[in-house]
Image (cartoon, rainbow, N blue to C red; front, top):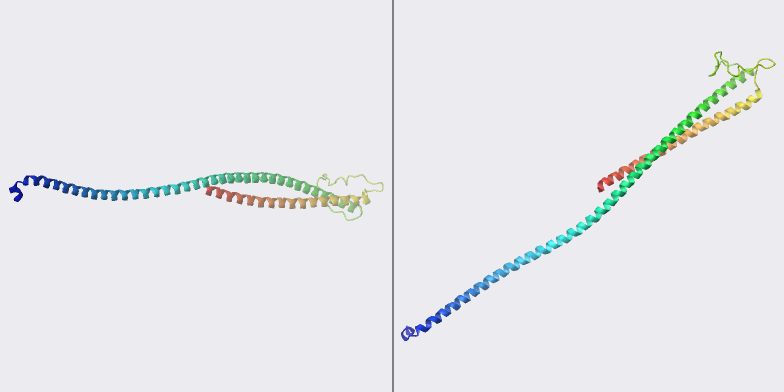
Length: 231
């Protein structure tokens, strides 16, 4: 009232206005400061979260990169082992096939040898019987009623058709017959020994081949299983 009366009011009004402006400015600055603090807190939090996420992603990438390198190395090693196994399997199968072919050829040869030896033994045995019967009959022993294979219709063989001696019936050379019979017995024994030896060799060869075949087939099966597992 005093200021109004004295005329000072006209000066106080601008001062009050400036004061209000200052108050408003301070309030705005305080609000801005508070807002900025909130914004900084939000940004700091967001940055912290992003940095953590980035670091985690980087660590994961490094882990995956290391795992990829490990798997790549394992893949290369597996491919190498698969190739080696395939080569081994092919080699084993080839070896078994060749062994089977050799075994078959050896078997055929042994069977042919056995057949020849058996034929020779049978022929020698027949020759011995014919000679023994002939010389036994010629020497006075009882004559066995025997008609050898290959005799004529009259039942006579080469010995029967031999010419008579000056003294009568042909009796052959009794002394030399001992040497002939002995020789034939040796030949017969050789044939029997051959039959026994070849039969034993054939059985041994077959047993060895069967064992080799079994072992090879087991090795092939094991390698096939390993190959499939690695693939």
